[in-house]
Length: 387
Ligand code: SF4
Ligand code: SF4
Image (cartoon, rainbow, N blue to C red):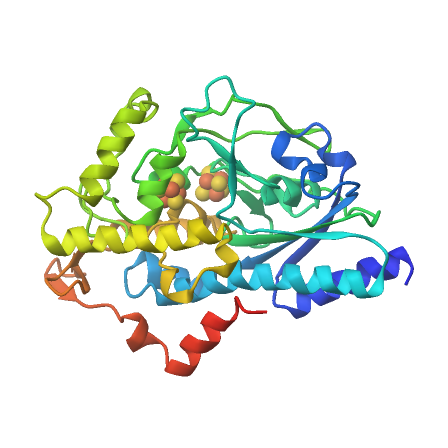
């Protein structure tokens, strides 16, 4: 198989596995990018990165932001992560069977190494992956970094999941994306309840140069800051009118950056979340069950192998909101700010309290995993991670 036929077959294989976008980037384009874009770390002699994206269906996003249900996003996330990992393994195997080139499947999330190159890595709370799929995706022409720091594509915005494989095959790279489709609407910062990234300040920790172009994005905080919100321990808007998918009604936006950099502060915060005896028992159990799920994924060091039961989107707002169409983004934001708050009852079941169009308070229980999916669907979704 010649190299152009190989490229064609690789792309077709990835599209056949359900990805919506695929691109090829080169080692040359990543030569001035940060350390996590160094392909050599994962695969000595790597020449190309093959990067693809799975997306969130719009209806699933509408249901998620309006708090109708979160199971559709749970499903999209399982396909996005476990499906991406599966595609990476299949592609690496295809490469092995059909070529003499080496291939390295990139873990889509949950494997990080400390930034030892930074003068102050805040006690290991700033970390980076073996290979940054976002940087790879820019090099592969899928898009550019948006204000959130996520990849933003022309076709699907940033509401997506990336996967990738590195290879020693010198595939011809696809053209870089001409435009940056982030319009700086800053809705990504508005939907974040932790203040993880700045509304106005640009990140200056390191230059991100890919294919000769500098990528800019918002100044970021520490991992814990997003981690607490993304996990779903805490998540409340500044005005207290809406929450993320969590009964942890605490807004972290007002905490100054210096405090997050203090490891004692972070340790106290985690104790408050996980072992504080003054928390009602149902809340403590809820928080501990999140910790167990996170622990399971952390032990695997690969979110692509995570059990479906441990896949529980509760925030992810900065990524989810960033659909391609700015008008739709605003609609999703409006749904969120009118979506009310999540609570849990004494049995640990989550319910939503909000005002309907007439201003009348309503309470309802969104469907649980068992109510939303059939047994067969649950098995099928869990099995995606088993190649
Ligand atoms: S939500 Fe708006 S500002 Fe944020 S990354 Fe997307 S397009 Fe850019
Ligand atoms: S996942 Fe949630 S908490 Fe984390 S940065 Fe995004 S919006 Fe903020």
